[in-house]
Length: 278
Image 1 (tube, rainbow, N blue to C red):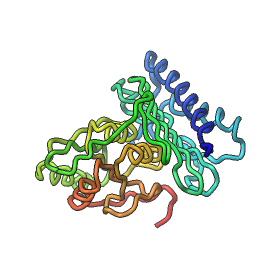
Image 2: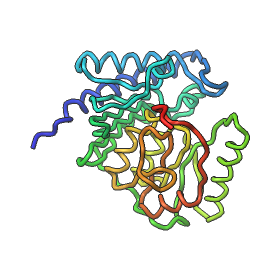
Image 3: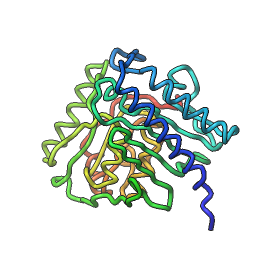
């Protein structure tokens, strides 16, 4: 049976690689930095340039498709997922890393139809690692198939999360309390790479056993979610229930046992939804 999305995916890979070249070239020059919702919510001219390039390149080939892009939403576009073929784009996942030239920066492109993610592309451009995952077809990095660690013992796990500014002091306390609970299980350690996309890819490679985050967005999660599941991992809500792309929260793990144990330990805090629903 023919693969209906192969041509779409190949176009996405080519565009992601082109975007990565723009990002790597920009890293050699002075970076112009602006802020969005808070002093640490950063955006650069390169974020905006890359997203515009990705969307225009894909729209030229698929004019009827929909798009959800980080910078487009920041500029006022809606973040609503419909049944229409939709490209979900983070032009630079790890903008703060990019600004500081911390070498984990990724282009993330997910593709959904009927609200289901069909494939994901993550290009960690400084590392020159192209991660891909397609529903039912496996996950790969530079052509090599990926498999999660399949670790089931939380005390033998390495966990990824992210630590960032929280305007509400109670939210910040909950974030650090969650980390403390996990460290005291104990786990082998907690790491923060600075990009949700790369964090999920590291779970897919078996380099880490889980990644959890509250407060990220659909463009951070879409591509990585399918890459993890196609590598044999699990993706769930932070309460242990089904993953919801618009929820702004997730756990990815090497096994259901690890994911459910993390869900049992951590507390949620309000972060809203990407689609504005309650």
